[in-house]
Image 1 (cartoon, each protein chain N blue to C red):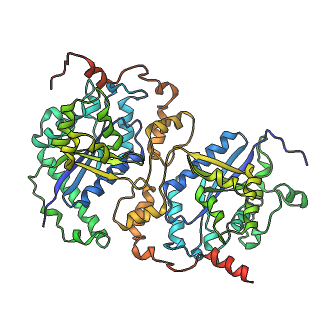
Image 2 (image 1 turned 135 degrees about the horizontal axis):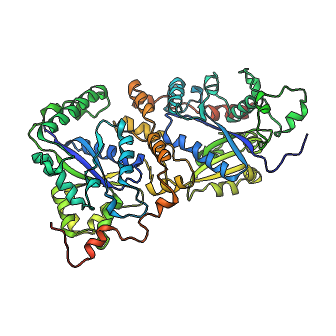
Image 3 (image 1 turned 60 degrees about the vertical axis):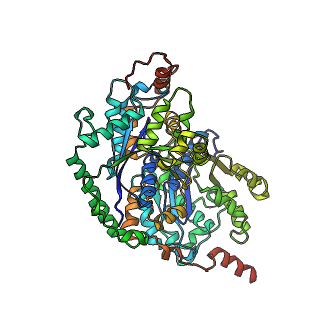
Length: 284
Length: 294
């Protein structure tokens, strides 16, 4: 196999995992910022953005049905020509670790085979090596039509805000080996506000520091603090959310009367799925 | 049953270009004023400044009006008014307010574009009330209890709406800039009309007001609204992004993005427009002989 040409660009798919409860203009902005940033490095070509809403089994307080969250995300991305919604994660009956979702989408990218089984979420060795081990694998159609300036192996990178990155530090929320595999085999694109503490957080973590070349920090200069929590709060208080979420999403929320003090109480007192899982794992 | 005073919000500015944040200001102001229980916001008006303002990077009013119209297509209560931009010279804000008020009172044909004769006002009024009524029906369970007993049709049709200037806190602070405002104009704005001022993070309008005798005197007519969901989309940053080929999707409406691309409005060249020129109000107030007749 020929050496990878450093002038060629790596194809990237940006994957955003989260509650999207509801999706906001800020979520959508993350994709735009990440794409611009990666393109400006001259080393990447972003070919797709994927929004993967978390399943109901996550048990976060105030999390409404995945059906609605997926529908709103689809409405919001209807007029985007590169960002789409994937409901594989949300249609699983159990909560899935983010790493599994990353693996699934990476597998899908390498071989667009319509098997939706969890088997696709098997561990991946470093990109490139897998192809060497399976020389008889049928090349996905995509590769045949590749332009000459594209490197052969596309990557799926996790797109997130600084809050997700810093959540790596919350006890029992993430498994260390998951974090390692995420930054080592896939990579992160992390959007944060100017003056944030993300760089310090990375510095203070041996794992993150080791793979800092695979953690792309993008600064958001236009302060955009449109969190879903605030949107839900505004809705409970009868306040307008126009121009903070796409019009179609606002209309959908209003039509279906989605957010109320009752919906905010859902899962109250329930332990978050990853915390529950890791606590019981450590017991065994 | 206290009947509410009808109110119209007027925002002056460059709108170069209009952004989601500009439109947010209206939504925030309306929510706040409705909540006081004293007002019924019936309309929002955006009045883009005249090209003669000579601000650096200001593109033609023709475009700024077109973009604002596109952005407001989906709003049922906010509209653009081109009157100010169509005048031959730059117009002081207080005159824009006066003109709007005059028209409300008498349907004065010299303020043609507002065209708000009493009859039309009532129509507007009724439309807004109808829309409000149906929205209220839908949101009945969500609105605070004290509102559900209101009957919006209790408004007197002969009551003239109040007109208030909608702005950001930084606008308030420009009152301090030497020669930018005339003292008597500031007084007229806060006394006769009133301000609805949305504050961003990092600015403390209450303190600024307390530091000004004039503003303190009329503080009952200055409504301070806090924006908790920070969304500081400055038009300047939007223009920079556009010049650099960066995305501004989800910061300004898609229709405005298409318009800008189609007409190639913001470029390095457009950013240099009016470079070296003095802002028109500074020019005017610097002269010893004031040709303007108040």
